[in-house]
Image (tube, rainbow, N blue to C red; front, side):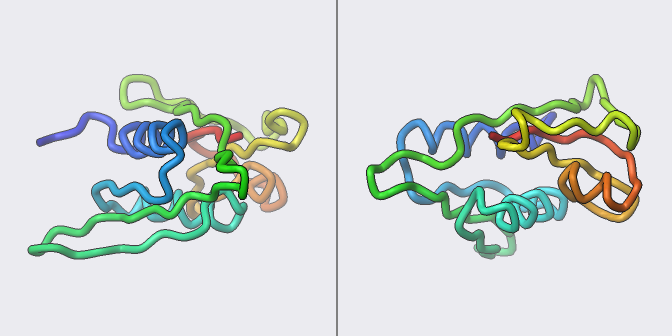
Length: 132
């Protein structure tokens, strides 16, 4: 089955798993998704992820962070740039999300990174998603 927006699909799977307070969720593999998960792991939004291969097809298994009271760490996810409407941002337009609580993930010429790191490196790029 062909997906129009695989990144939105991954974010929706994470959002749904958070609502049900699941520990793990899986989705199809792509290098861009893996890079987004790497940034999420560096920021402490997920505990880890694994690349699994079954019958020649790769998949990503994402391990979500949940508190002892069974409250998910991720409160919300939002896809910004979509296949029908790409959103690009200059360095001068990088603003902190929710006073620095949230993270904006940007695809730059140097790879996928947070908006804070892109601002330090003086890079603009495509705004992929926001997570808080």
